[in-house]
Length: 108
Image (cartoon, rainbow, N blue to C red; front, side, top):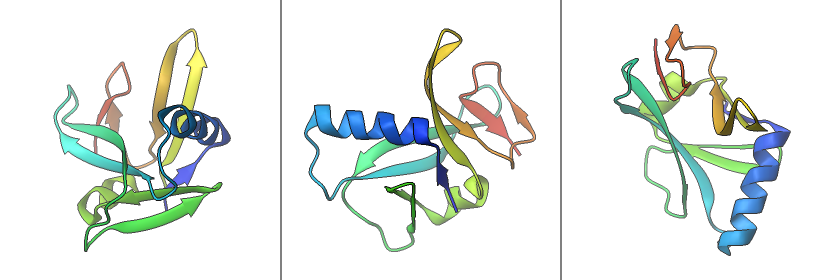
């Protein structure tokens, strides 16, 4: 399961509204190679499912990820911070053994 915090839900709703995205768009989360810790998170809006996608809905938000990324993202919570220490989406990933200082990359 991939979880969506209330803060992330509010920001996703705001982005969907301001971008005028159709109702069939969902949040696609993936893990890609790169970053100072080896793996990086990727977050997009998408409206096309792929054969091996894993589909979740939490807090009213549909989240989709590919099977390979899900192995790294299991039980992760998507959050959003608008504070002084950095604005943006963040991943609270219990599977990460190490993260970089900016929180955009991790390793397992």
